[in-house]
Image (cartoon, rainbow over all chains, first blue to last red; front, side, top):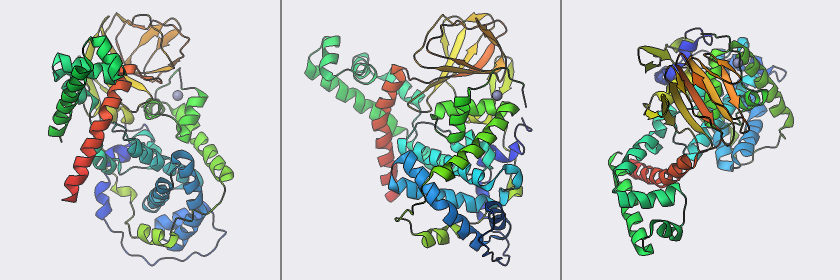
Length: 220
Length: 233
Ligand SMILES: [Zn+2]
């Protein structure tokens, strides 16, 4: 397992979250105003010296492209704005981990933008999953899947749990919930299939869903 | 753990993975194969380079007027950076099958970390379904030695990644890291002589999953409201 990807150990399970509190020793910021610097030189300057001028240059080269990728994938201005913020923050934070072995700077920035976008979409769709971009594309480096995971915690409901709650419903209520939510029938169709009056169906549905809601609620 | 796989994802699947355009379930199974397969890892980094070229070339350079650039930069550079030597190794995730344990690729370990609920199906097959999105149907499958899946057909494509042991069908014999793709047209009957653990992804959802996901949505919103109102106090 250890040699799967170089440094696979460093990529596991967001163990770096704690490093956020570790301040880098202050070093005099080096100023690079040379606009002909390559993206790679800029990125390495940001990583080695916290070079803000280099970061500004990367920001102006990439932020509009990142915004455009966000608009293409989310069609939402606010989320695209968030994507610029999160992707450029990741560029800043992970710049010390970049080296030329990881490929070009543009490819490195592309992959981390893709990954942040995946996580933003995942939150937007409230997918009941625990897998973050950092689990799927570990090449980028490491960190914060754990943090994202914790933030997501309150929105996640395990399907297996719902399934077991569902199994605890009285048979008559379960049959109604099944017709409506699993077989996707209208109230009228479900009442016909179960051969019960529409009013009975509606009250069983209300009871069943209320009970499920209660069971989920007590789990919070 | 590099394994010489004989069967790999299709070029379209690898490209979609590099571009980030696939459903989470498909991303997970491809990620698990790529972790085991040096050939596909190489292809992915080439495809990422190509995708980044295309991204920069095809994107219009219009300014996002809503962004206050200098304020954003100021807030970003306040954050500490991450140093490489802060990295520590995590735990090695495993899945226990009968008399031995299997080390899972990272993405699958994360999927399994919430616990798997195994169900026994007919023919010596055990199944643990996991929900990763609303576009795919994902499951771990454990085939006991000598077991056979009933002949079946599916809507959409089915991808199966072998994790341990092996299985065979009319077209081949599949070993760990093999990535087997079957389309809707294929009618096949997998069987396993020595026993097999795999992860399978169907790219069309079963009605049941879809229904449960719908049933889930109001609760997710409900819990979210509860969580936000609790946080506000
Ligand atoms: Zn491969």
